[in-house]
Length: 208
Image 1: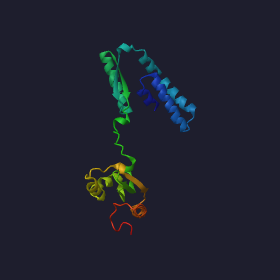
Image 2: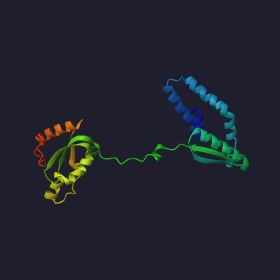
Image 3: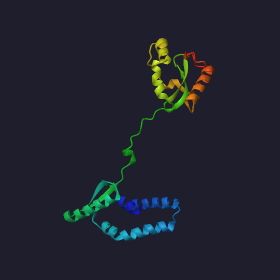
Image 4: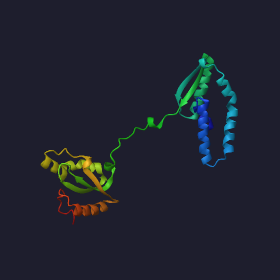
């Protein structure tokens, strides 16, 4: 890990910062700090001659090439090839390996309002144009059931009372109870229908 930190660091400050992170990680794993410092010092001693030679190079003759970091084997192979090429063409070719950020691969998903992501719930619809309401349940995600209500008693209410069945909105729905199973949904739907007496529930077997 020290070797990888050294390979990825283009400056002494960056390498020191990586070493500080390694000290923190291994100290939390109960490694003695003396062992951690000894490993870092040993690595620095073994690489001091190469590091000094690199630092003594004239910056004007050094060409730094930014490359994506794949793995340590590939990085070592690329470093050797550039070193051999440097001997042939004159200027020193120095690779700077850059790790790919996780955010480059992961596209943020569209965040839906928390209510529509819920499932296995008893819910209430309240029309914001009048006092009509409805109580129902769904074992699926609520946003799926809301979309279906355009063709249910709620959709018919909008068409007959307000002349447009495209007035359905998520803000008109409220979760009354989060349930553990479909049976729980049926029970609590019945209880809420008896309590709230929604005028759009027209099924005669809703409460029995």
